[in-house]
Image 1 (cartoon, one colour):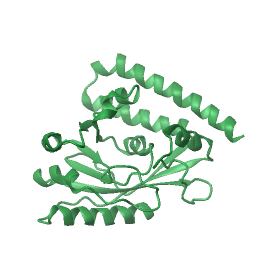
Image 2: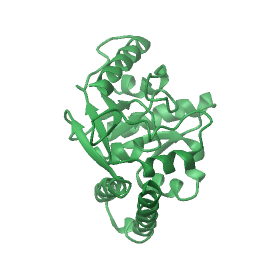
Image 3: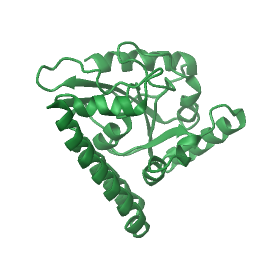
Length: 245
């Protein structure tokens, strides 16, 4: 039964991805950025439903920017989950842009790209984020830099908050977790880390009983004169509490 359920969900997900690519190619050029982002949010919500995942929001998502959402990272599902809760422009590694299908969808969602191993590109990204915040955008980062195991959190990289400091923008901590919808127990089915393959993680998620994605928004805050590293550690601890609550 699990395999049959997974196959049915997979067919629906693939069909939805094809629909998304068609919308991006045919309809996006005639839409304003706000209209595009509304379509991205609606598409992400349907993607979750096709995969057997519902959404629960705790707290208050930002109505508008400028704000940087700072979240823990545990799954390939984190980005569509956060888009479904509230569209945001993610900061992602540059090679994602060249990935087939995923790169097209990421571009349509307004993703900003960074070459992580280049100090010069990191400075360019700070400027790009600063300009986006000045336009009133809602940005999102995973300061851990990679997915964790869902049990503990990795340290945050402070450099991803530099733009919020220079723009004197708000940062809103966000805790993500997945739970078995029937029991409420934490589900690690969507986790993706280490030597695990993406295909294996996706298949395990599709085989699982109904999952609920929980997005817990904290209170937006500014640096308030704090050292960047001290603020980063404070945000890390706040996100850690939110993902458990």
